[in-house]
Image (cartoon, rainbow, N blue to C red; front, side, top):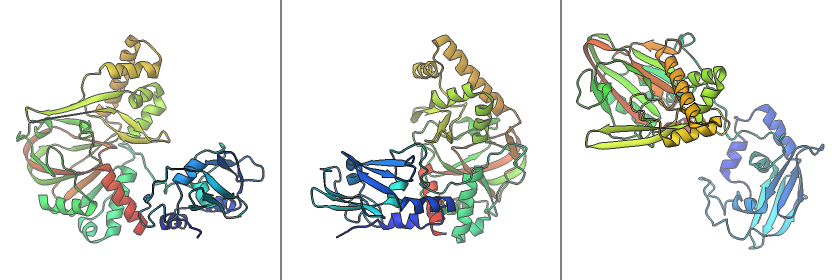
Length: 418
């Protein structure tokens, strides 16, 4: 018999994330007109015939949305859909869907709604519904960050909506403070378990440091000033969500936390020096972290990582672990600038110097005093964090990580069911 959409597709099409304009678009899509071509289906979305899409038979067979081919709850393939994609019969006369009977006897139904949402080969003017709701991102600097977002610790532990508010704030602003957090290591574990699987690395599931106690041979365990940076760019799976929690602060002076919105920094460079932005987003740099004879980690990163829409996705910046620019870095810089090695290396260092002058300056830096009872959550792939020099007294601070995939998965699930 005829097989319809998977439940997941139907849930999405019925979700409130669609705007009114997209609902109108889908209404128009339901009246699409299809014709069969040699190796594909051609769909006109408008009477003027200036909005169209093409769907190849190989692609259609591979992506049949029926519950025989896709699991109705998990939307995962159940069959080998890469075999013969020869249609035995194609029916394009229906007003709601294209029906295809394949040579092997399988029957597929492709709604015009579904085809529009998944269009991949189309005219420039075709507007498709979004793959997911567009979340808001608010860029900020030292002047515009007046009141950082906060969510109470106990509310997060007992209420999914409060946890959702925390994660949405981290997504939108890059940071969120959590007042009311008990000054213990265990309290951070409780919060982290609510967020998802904890990301372990060389430090274990949780790192703890006392200012000046060099139990780990790393400059962050000293009392020195730490320039704003992102953590762990040397790890192939760089940390995503980061929790920072002061568990003790006695007679202390100095050590104020410094925060920079890396996306705002990147946007400023893009607007004021596009050439430097191009270099920082296309030239990779090697990062390396070594612990004497115990461990060594390394990974290549572009300072700015862009998504498929050329918007900021991640920033990786760590002056401490940055390695020398190498042959690959130089080759990439030459390609970006279409120039010789001398000019490429000069321009690359100009871009790095320009970036770090902004990081060392005050225009983008938000300073705050982290004290026991106030935990900080931040997006480590957006926010640069550091501290001023720690002068006197005793301070103990702990931290934990979640991968980007983990905390974003939790955010998506909470959005769907709250």
